[in-house]
Every structure is written in C-alpha cells, then in structure tokens.
Image (tube, rainbow, N blue to C red; front, side, top):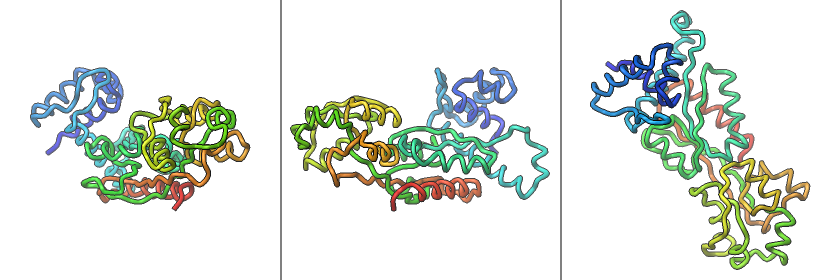
Length: 300
C-alpha cells in the first residue's frame, strides 16, 4: 500500500522547488518533509528528488507526482457523490494538475480553456511551456498529465485528440521589407542576409517556411526571443521577420503595421491534445474545455 502522506511530500517539494516551501504548504517542518521522502525512497529503493536549487523530480518521482494528481482528481470527484467527505478536507484543499503547452497556444487560445475549467473546478493548473514538437516528451517521462503537442501518435498510456490547425504567417514590418527585400523578391539569397526571429533552439517554423518557399534549406541570421508577445513586438519594430500565429498579428496586418513576406505561403500547424488514458471525470472536463476553446480559435 502506498504511503500517501509521503507521496504528497514528494509532490509538494517538486511543485514548490524546495523542502522549506513544501513544509510551509504542508504545515510541517522541513525535517519532517525530508524524513517522509527519505523513508519512501528507502522503501522503494529509488531516488525520487534531485536535491538542488530548485529541487526537481527524478523520472520515478515524476511518475509518483502524476499518480498523486490522478488520485487527487478522483477524490475531488468523489466529493460530488459523497458531500460528507468535504468535512475531512482543509478549506483550501485543491488538486494541482500539470499541463504542457506551447507558448503560442498559451498566448492565443489555451487560457480560455484554462479559465473555463478553473471557474468550475476546485483545481490549480501548473503550466510547463515547451515547443509543440517536444511537449509529448513531458508526457513520456511523467512530468505532466496532459499536453498540447504537434504529435498525433499517442504517447504510451495516453489518448490523442486532434484540436485543429494553427495558421502561421511569415511577417515583417514595411520598413524591414524595404531594407531587406526592396524588390519584394524573397529567395534564398535574400533570406540568407535578412535577420529572422526564432523562439528557441527547438523552434523549426522559420526553417520550415524558408524550405517551403525556396525548395531547400536556407541558413538565416537569427535573433533568439523566447516570448510570443515579444516576438510580435520585435516584428513590428523591424528587428527581424518571424512566423507569427494569425491570431496575434491579424490586427497588425489589417492596419498595415505588418505585411506578409510572401502571399499564399502560410504554414498550418496541426495541434493535438494528449492526456493520460484514465477514466477520471475531472480530466474529462478539462479535455472538454480544451476542445471547446480550440474549436473557437483553431482552423479545422
């Protein structure tokens, strides 16, 4: 039988990043938290926490934290059927769900889903932001319970539900276009001299667009800018050209503050919602909120 007091200590340390803050949240001493985790690690013969600043979970620790989330959701749903159980809970008792989302979804449509879910549920959300091509990795190692990803192939133990497509446009300011593409000729030679904006080392959208337009890989100068909002601002300011979601730049295109580098060259990025294959009503309701928000924003 699992010791859920010790499991809660593991989950709290991972959530808070330190034994001291976890102890405050659990209303015990840091030594009590440390002792609980040490005993559980000795019992399992596995390291669960990587001690550091911040403290992080090992792979085994991630899977146990995920289990704690699942049990928490089941308990909260059980209260609906057995209201008397609520008397056993502390007033601020809420389950925390960890979700991985790509930054552009978080900046455009996913907050609508999160808001609708949290208004109706006694739950807190812990977001991990990652490139859509890599969020599935967080599911594989047990870091998160669900993720928005570009991978349609279900991660083992997960359901995969298509969400729709996010439209990306290669955009730049008119002044930038006059400087780097004075004849409006966007080819490999011009792109090799024109600074681009790249979210992080995993971002391949600019490279994919250049390959689509030029028919081959093009090495382009790159600014590294890991913020969806700053990405748009940098594009408006003429710092570089970048692939921006239509939802973030539609008004700027309409006003003329931004222009497409080349017409009819948009990229449609498929997005998928993957979540643990569990029959948990709260997780089903989170999925319903995500699907509703995606339907209102993404393209089929």
